[in-house]
Length: 352
Image 1 (tube, rainbow, N blue to C red):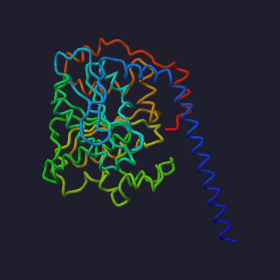
Image 2: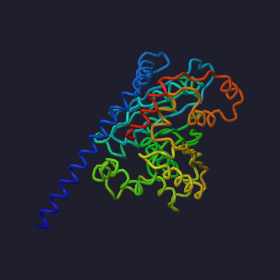
Image 3: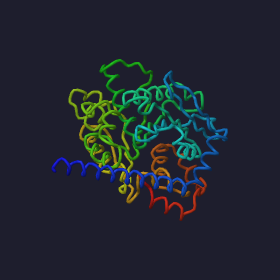
Image 4: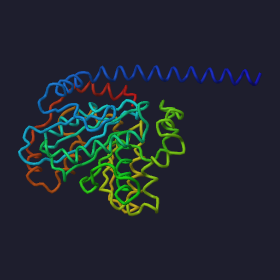
């Protein structure tokens, strides 16, 4: 009888899981339909604009390609954002950064969207290695496209924020003799790190991800085993006294997060910023009240005008450049891509 009850409980849990996944899928379909007007416009620019250079090869592994979004005027060297896209380590793709790339390019900032191997094509070590090689390409070749190799900002969103943070810490350790430095770039070229809606302590997120559908067994495979969570948790790694010198080489960290984020709680950024401050790294966390995981990255930019994240990123990049700040103040408001009622519906049904 006891075994029978256990079996019924397992069946019931399976049915609930299937129901939850089906509802998430339907919500995702509705979400995509509501934002379709924006996706069409962004896609058209991505494929047909002369200011976009797609599929530039940066390495010899699968998916070692990046896209460049260039300003119309590149007569003088421009600041650069090397962007690592999100996608739960499974569905990341460089084109996810198209909207960000297009809009920053309009403000005279070059954006390089770096692709990388996803699971199961690669695990977290492969993703970090790809990210590092992509950054190396940007550092060494961006001058050929009008970029300033000494004004590079590393940015990641969601899983991409985690990958980019791991990459920075790994590079810092290499530069202080902790491992073979096979990538030809230097932390001195990175002016700051921008982390958007990222997770930085994997131990704290395992149960949360499991409840959201990224199950423990799969997550452990992506992270190369439960025992590797510490190695790939930037918040834990920077507290290691043995790598104090490496940590001191890290650039300034600016962490952006919406307080209404259900995919990765905003506490992840707040906690990491506090930890970085304790170990001597300049860091700040900027919170957006009530914003979800995708509000700050998709819905708000599609709304047009001046959204908070865009303003904060541009302000950080152009800080100290009076001419750029003057041009920013005179820039035309960005156009709306999606009607407001569709954006509100997308916010309501968003599965993220």
